[in-house]
Amino acid sequence: MTKNESKTQTEKMTYNYHTHTYRCRHANGKIEEYIKRAIACGVTHMGFSDHAPYICTNGVESVFRVPVSEVGGYFSEISALKEKYKEQIDIKIGFEMEFYPRHFEKMLNDVIEYGAEYLILGPHYIEEEQPSGVHVIQKTDSVKRLEKYSNCIVDGIKSGVFTYIAHPDMINFTGDVEVFQREIRKICSAARECNIPLEINFLGIRDNRNYPNEAFWEIAGEERSPVTFGFDSHETVDAYDEISLVRAMEIVEKYNLNYIGKPNLIMLEK
Ligand SMILES: [Zn+2]
Ligand SMILES: [Zn+2]
Image (cartoon, rainbow, N blue to C red; front, side, top):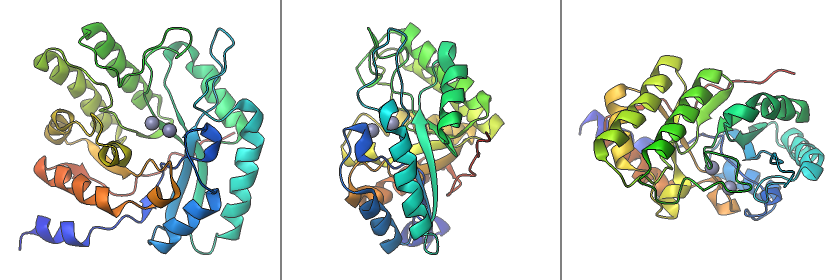
């Protein structure tokens, strides 16, 4: 048996910093049930990272994130459970947030003010979703969009406030392969230089989405970028996802990825 084979068989997840709640309006179940499921499956370090509240420049509030009016409830509800289960599991409360260059200073100030302990960068939109933003999961062959996407992630990595980059391979680029590789290499080399992990996202595996994108992970392997895993739980059962774990480990082995396991948390300070 090779070293890699034994690793596949024994690998367990004892951490997960990518968990959503019903407050984003597209996740389900009681928060306590997510925690119980995680504990039952051996998770010792868990983070809630629901979509950070966001009001667009035109005044329209984002509809798939925690509403500003519920931020207090988000923190108080999870804080009470964090205390209740503290002997069994270490829980952190943060957000998954975009990196919008022109708005980032305010975005960061806001989430720190709300009480976020940590952040993960989730690049879903390149520009604000209102009034005319397009989700990065929509197919595109625009080099300009790809360049904006990679630049945003690189700047997000360099900001030093994100614990890791969620689904860095979400963009659904259908254009020139060499252009894709060039832009992805920027992300992967910045991740290595700044030691910020890139996440293999288990929701993408569960839902059979366009990510994990192997063309991305091939470059991450060449660049020796640090790699971590995230369940991206939107249902209580996904507070542990052992089925997708098998697939994620296959990708790690196929591309000889620098899988670091649990990421080092970058804690925010008020
Ligand atoms: Zn979500
Ligand atoms: Zn996301």
